[in-house]
Length: 182
Image 1: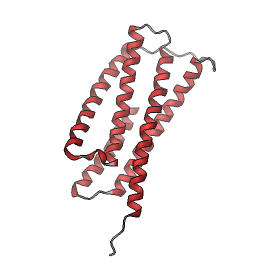
Image 2: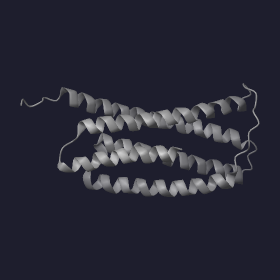
Image 3: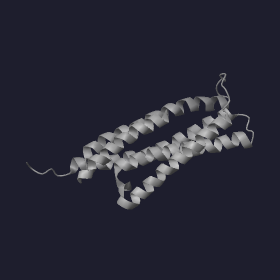
Image 4: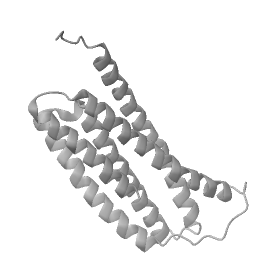
């Protein structure tokens, strides 16, 4: 599901960047797309964390366990390696693009960077989790998965907070900007 969220948010960021080719900032477009992008990031992260938190409560013995399947380490390893590879390629492109244009200061590109970073963090954590399951023969793979998801969610919210802060600065700049008289 997070791949669909990432793709939709990235399409919006790409549209804004294409519009900016004319030299204008397109602040309204940035404000709308970045608000939607960060909102979706937070919504889906909170939704995933809710389920993970419920599993954490079971792992801590505060809730009765439901009959759940263990996590298959080989399947998660495959998805994790694919995700890490794809995300590293995207992060490398962000780095090269930022080096050329300095676009990392753009709220729009920072929002897109947050989505890629969140996916990279999710893939990296899944990689570590799957290695723990396969190499350390961890008995409670479902609990490790739940704790990993909560950790990822907290770090994504921290990054989103920075994104919202930049968005608010852009909004204030846009609202307070002197408008030329017609």
